[in-house]
Length: 400
Image 1 (cartoon, rainbow, N blue to C red):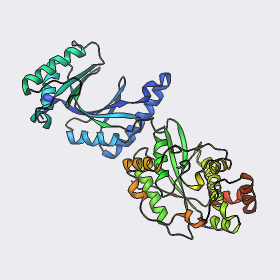
Image 2: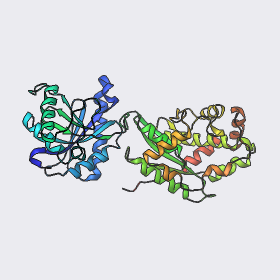
Image 3: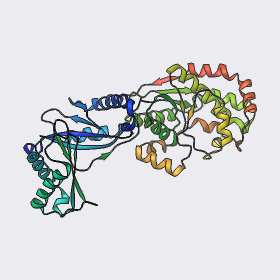
Image 4: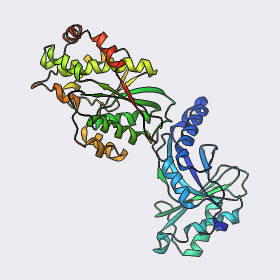
C-alpha cells in the first residue's frame, strides 16, 4: 500500500454504553483514555490519543507502519469500555483523496481477487464536508465498481469499506476487532476478589472489571498442609487478567492452620460453610485495609452444596460488605466458555492442591443455619482469628 494514497496508519476506537451517560459521560471518557494510555505504554511508541465526538483516535508517530498500528489495535482490544477497534488510515478531507485511499485500501484484498460483493458506508461527523454521506457512498462505490468490477450489495456485503469524516481528517478502514464492551475499569470503584485456582472466580473477576470495578485478588492457600502450587496458579491467573485493567495486586493468606481449627471444632457437615464464612470475614478485613468497597466471588446458584440459596444466605450474613456474584445465574458450560474466551481456562484446569479439599466432608450441609455457624465461630474466637489471618497476608507483585 502506498503511503501517498493511504496517508498515515492510526487506530479508531468506538465507545459503547459510555455514550449513554449524559452529564457524567466526560468523567467516563477521561477514565477510559487514561486506561488506554496505560495499556499502550508497553508498546514503547510515542502515541497521541485524542477524544472526538463518540470516538477516540490513536495517532501513531510519523513513519509508523501498519504492523505497529495492528499491535496498537490488538492491545487496546483488551481495554473494557470499547466495543470496536478499527485499524484505519488517516487521509486529508478532500473527496478525491478519500476516493483514491478507498481504491488503494482494497487493491490487494482477497475479497477483491475473487469478485466479492461490497458496500461503502460513510459517516459525516463534520457537516462542513462538501459531500453528504450518501453522496460520498456513491462517489467511492462507483469508482470501486469501475476499477475492480465488484458487485454492490447493500444488505449483506462480503466486504465493507467504511469512511468517517471527522473534524480534521477522514478515516478509511475495513472491518475491525470487537472490544470488551462494558465500562472503563476504575469508573465504578474498587473491589476484592476471592480468587481460587478454579474456573469460576477468574471469570467473575473479569465480569466485574467490565462493569468498571478495579479489582484486587485474595487467595487462600492451604499452607502449611499443602504445597505452593495453588499460589502459582493464582499468580498466573492474575497475570492473565491484568491485561484488562493493569495494576493488579495479589494477596495470599496462609489458611491451613485455620482450616485445622475448623476441623477440630466438630460439626463436620458445616465445616465447608464455616470455612467460607471465615474466608469472607478475612476478606472483609483485608478489603477495609486496602479500601475496597465490595467482595466478589465466583458463586453460581446450585452449582455445589455450598452454593444453595440457604448456604449463600448464611455466607452473606457473615459480613457487612456487599458480596457481588456476577455468575450467580450462569451454568458451568457458560462459565467455561467465557473462561476459554478470556484465556484463563487452560490455567484453571492445571492440577493443584486446593485448600478447600482439606475440609471436604462425606456429606455436606445444604441448609446451614446461621445460629449453628455462629456457635462454631464462637468456639474458634473467629474475630481474633480473622485479624491474625489478615495480618499474615503476603503480597505477590506482578513482574512486568
